[in-house]
Image (cartoon, rainbow, N blue to C red; front, side, top):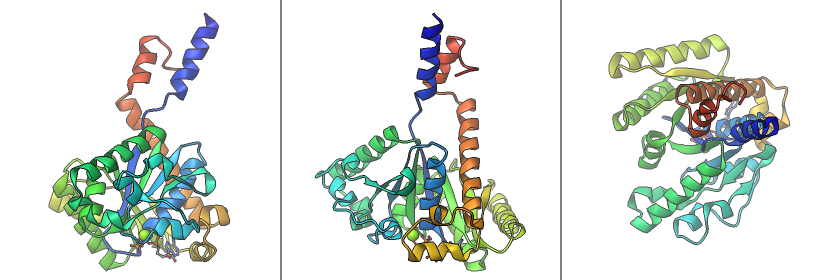
Length: 287
Ligand SMILES: Nc1ncnc2c1ncn2[C@@H]1O[C@H](COP(=O)(O)OP(=O)(O)OP(=O)(O)O)[C@@H](O)[C@H]1O
Ligand SMILES: [Mg+2]
């Protein structure tokens, strides 16, 4: 009997719900979406999460370039039904997987029904296999970026303290909010001099969103401007692995911990099947 209960606890603990989808986006280009996507993925994987980064940028294969990967297959092959998404996964550093991007994504809205279905099926398969799917989108209010962001469980909106980046970030919030009013936004302020600067930017953006859209934006955290970031990029390595002690790396681990904590809180508010099953059996507290 004890053995049975123990087995069930382990079963419940191991039976994870399907992935939370985080779309990393921005209004302005070059603010740090790709570096954030990849390094955040590795930070989450370091906490035992199963993470895949999907490169949804327009044909530039940003994620692969950043990691020095060179895959034979990409999303294009999935769109055309030549490969399943799990067959094109590239093994990235730090235990993450990468779905290599493709210029085919430039025309997501123009795809025929079969191709669209292939993309959807692929995304569902990714969700089943991961705890987090991180989508590195293009900058700006282009159709694809907005479609991914509006569909995601959470939008990680990256901006720098530059006024033009803040203005464009707000335009992005407005567009995504216009498509889906219950989108969840988490602000990451990148390339800051101090945390105070990040807090000031986040509060300014949140205030404007509150005033004009009647909604709040939550602050996820900041990443300092850190020379280790570009040094690691030059070596085609993620900075979090290349320079684990760097200030940017420590902040990235903080972001990951906050995301995990928020996920645990969300699961508690809306428990999934296994948790409810465990509760029915009186095993929830230790499961
Ligand atoms: N925290 C940081 N400290 C210093 N430099 C940084 C930091 N974050 C990003 N950078 C620099 O900014 C550049 C752009 O970053 P990244 O490619 O991640 O931006 P992006 O938003 O994905 O750009 P794009 O819109 O072109 O896809 C990097 O090459 C890197 O040199
Ligand atoms: Mg990028």
